[in-house]
Length: 603
Image: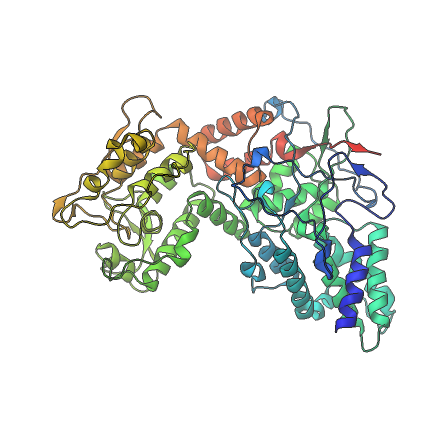
């Protein structure tokens, strides 16, 4: 209905405004406010930042400034905090926090929230424009721009979601409009559903404005109680308070420029870290009771959540982005070079990796060493045949198997090795860059503009090492490729689809490799297993893994303010036997997780 759409657009302008403001707030942020999307429709409410033309450098971007929080009612009286453990390493860091940018929901988070909020399993955000990545992850706040197209996609998804699920919303309240009144029941549903959508209680003013939307739509010809509620849901799903994780804290009482997060904000930080989604019922209840204030309370919730199967998508999300595995979804290979590689095999490689990660992260005992050195994987008869290993006793279902001496951990899995290769050949460059940047946290410069970056064509008379030799011989390429190619050559015992090999073009494969200038000693290793063993023994790899989790978990780059927190995370991770669950728990205990910087606001 065009008339209803125009009305709803106007009503929403009055309803949501900008994050953290009400019509009565005459406060101007110290930073210049962001422009809004122009044009009609509810999408015009979204903060709009045009995408940058150049590659994003997060540390150079200005941080979005959160304005004062609307009056959401008094915070619940916190329960008595247990005495802090004086030996807790987290307390060794003085309360400090780098700026915490307002974080927009990523496509993954949006899908998970709609699933948990409305029961929608269709993952509508998967068709949104892709999220920009920074530092290897798609949840870096500095890169999460909102384009005009994305604003329109938010509008369309809100309309469709509201239309699909309004009847289900009626079950959220036991209020019967035929017995009480439609007005009363609408108000109750707005309060209950609004709390879950905004992940905090609505302020009285917000409830009033949502009731204004309901009343106006309900009074229009042809509209019903249900369609008026649908308009309210549509409005909520386009509000910045739904699409962004807006945080203000409890106020700066110590004069140190920091503010502790409220219980509601802590519930969201925990849920988006561990579930990549909105808080569950237990977190909402804890926030309402004021029981997310102390380290002990936060840790107890984190441990509970990590034992829940809902944590598994977040573990996969981190590891797939860290390992750059997303291209497996659309990977293809040259049919002439690899005739056995098809969509069935591609899908099985993906399933093998998912099962491998789940086996390590599910029970709480898995470690970084397991990721690198595990002698276990999951195969069925088809995947075993692809790898050229014995398929005796295997059927169609993936089954846990023990690897032979040629394989160990993530570096010898077909999914990763296939992604780090070209369609018709292996790529020592892709594999070497991957090890340097993702496992050692050593960023490499981009190649000069005048350098041909196309790999040499396959030659039946030459090995890959021989074809790539010019990189280390050409003075224009030597300085970078002596860091890259020797690492990638050490993975030449696996072909471009992840199969172990000892020969190439009739020649013996030379899988000797070297990591120069990173470790003490000469950095020599032989083959993928030798590389995994070397990496597992190096503190630099452990520290890089911690840094990657920091970037993913906090949605930003580490800064000088985070040195103590990072030291605590690295020490805790090491002392836990490099246990992955313990690292995630430690992430919830740092001042960077529990505080935010109080932004200055100019009246």
